[in-house]
Image: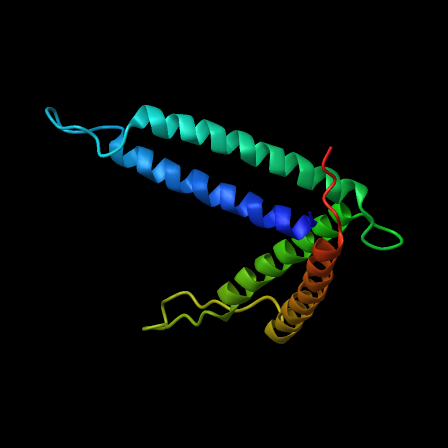
Length: 153
């Protein structure tokens, strides 16, 4: 099995856990004299089974990521950490860009005037560059996911 296939199965388990949680929330409490639409005990059992399956996929994926080479100098796990760093940096700068770009209307001369303390065009260029780096790295990671065998033991 390829790593990408395991990632899909992990995502399926995560979605199933979220759905079971929603179903449990709907049946965990009912009006006196009524019966729940589904058995909470069965749903709790299904939740436990699905979480155990999810843990198996996570362990296999993490082991594969940490033991598989991404390139000559990094493992797949290190490449994923770098991709996360790039995205977090980009998101923070993008939020700052949004804040710096907001125009504040003044209705009288007594109102406080605000000014931007950063160069918006430079910040936008950096956001664009981080976005480009993220896309390129993400593409290489996805490519590696489809060419890497899942470590199954």
